[in-house]
Length: 493
Image (cartoon, rainbow, N blue to C red; front, top):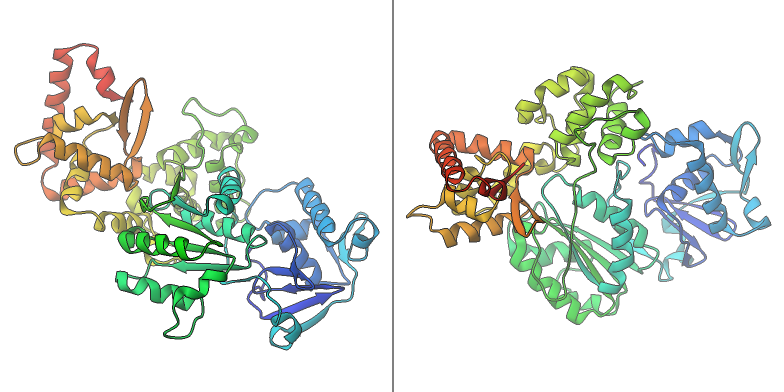
């Protein structure tokens, strides 16, 4: 939620035995944190800040779900959850009442006090966190968020893996928000801006607000959740740090986001898939289209950009193609939807063949490598070795999924022996630049459309595009002549 002007205020709103900390997005009953979902907390904040007045249902929905299409039943479900959290039966009615035909009102007395004056609250061990404010709703990730929330306290160390723009940071932040009620402390460390592995511990020390010279031994007794975001370029240092912390701090859980696993002891890896996209066979209704999370995201972002935007039946084919061509990649879909006011739907669709021009308009509030799709891919490409860069570019001549044998057949030469080709292709898959598909007894590798377009552009600039297109054509021709059925095993649409 991003509609409240004083979301980052240090003030605390007190009512009854409760204290609502605005900055921390935390509500305490005495010194005990309440179990409360993010939406219920958003609703509570609106009602408490407008205590004594009636807030209409439409206004509540607009404030809490600013860019989503939400039915009134959703609001009622969260109000019910909020009442349960504040006390069962008659106790709940002391706080939130329903005004028929008008909306909801918070009727308890509310006192607004600066956080620094709450000495009694500050002296108890209440949950602390430095989680960044989430600016947009999370779309299409309920299942994987729920899985992480359930598993992380038990497994203690999980790595969320996926390509740039897939939404790893967004998912990790939502998981951390939901787990705040389970841990005494929540610590978020963004490593995106750090290039020197020696600075990792310093960044963590700052996030923990420790004095200079203090060691990380302070984590030994903490029941804490540590989120290490964007670890791929500091792979080795993060691996040793995580292993050391898990050994020395038995009550610590660690959630890592990276474009490849850390390969550390005790690591559980969860790959973040793209959003669900509609089939090429077509859609028959708006309701059917809105069942796909990629379409939900596109529509919500388009509506935020263009007032009055609504998905119509005549738009279904175009929107479906946009979502498919952008691989269900959240960053790409958001950036495409941001062009809706300038290009309209047909214009966005027409620009898909030149996707990097279309997706070059960035999000100025994001870190540089998340501002545009090209910036995200540049970041991944620059982390590769020269050989990995070369192989990635040359593989772009494959228009469909390919086997390792096919990769060797097209790329293999005296300077790049078959074993080396296999090793590099597998490495690119680990780094989330290729996706691995299993089926029919074969392993196949496939580009995301956006990644292939990027690699193909690099290959063209290298001057090797024509040569490898010819090698690809010769390989396909040779395979067909060798066995009429073999091509179906080598290359699959």
